[in-house]
Image 1: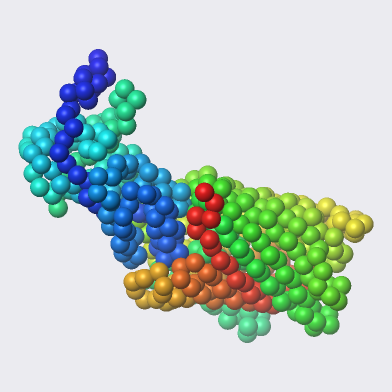
Image 2 (image 1 turned 90 degrees about the horizontal axis):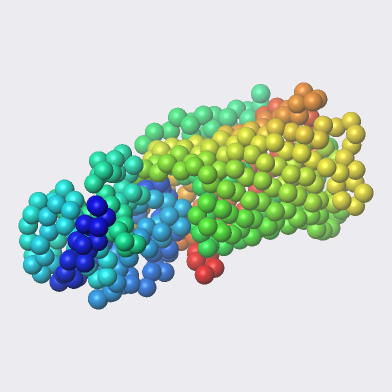
Length: 167
Length: 274
């Protein structure tokens, strides 16, 4: 029953006017610059990425996407894992044009579904940042806080579970 | 205990106790539990310059090695062995090595990882010592477990392995009175000295490492322990130059040339394979 409702919700979720601009990735499991470069080189292979700015000391990467690109966050996660490390946080910045969100609301952004959890009903306008709370996108302890609310897929479609960042 | 040994052991203990430093786990005499990046290829050229105990000659071994990150958890090496033992530099054997990372717990600036490894070697040199070393001296295999803890301030890694030697190729039989099975154990630690602050991949990194390398032959009740101290330079976050010195701490085994230098160059080609 839950699934049927989700499929319905997906079908009803109107493609929204929002454009993903950039993402801030923090990787975990490393301190050395050779390790950091391995992640950088792995990210460079992703065609939708236009530019990567690295803070080696913080193990963080500011990723800018090409305009109109269909961004797959799972590809970014895989790039980090292929380099031998893990994602500690992934914050996505998008430009919203009157997008309604609320608890468990699903939004279609450039071909992918994003499900907002721990979010009150509101209209997103302008540049907003949301954080992915799926498994392996944040440390295990932090993931446990979201585990019960997370729905990873519905009707064969990948759903990214996100929450609005406080920043 | 000789002074040089005391100094080396002192460095080792100082490194273990070091605080407020960045850790490094790109060890020189041992492998960490971490792997190289998937789809990357590494080239490693190791030069061992060891002093023979008896006549003080330099015993030179050259080990060219190609490394391949198959996926995030598996890496494979193919290695060749050459030495000057027959007065000119000649090939002595080949080996294959595989390492599989089976456990990872990553946190920001930290990880605990475990890996299993195995090496199979063929060597055609004359067996002239009780020490078993399938990495360049004996035909045989070695298999073991590696555990590495990286904390922002400290990288420490330990290995335990089982090693079995067979007779070497070219009719060089394994001496009957010697133990052909060994247990190896290592303990390594490393520290980043330079740069003080990471700002770019172009900065040259300087690391110092200290490692303890031990072996015991359980049947004969024989063992040795070596200590090593090394400097490592990393250029462009991609090319490693290692200079290590190894010194025997104690041994009741027959060993030809336990003390000496290791000079190594290693270059990593990221995304070499599609």
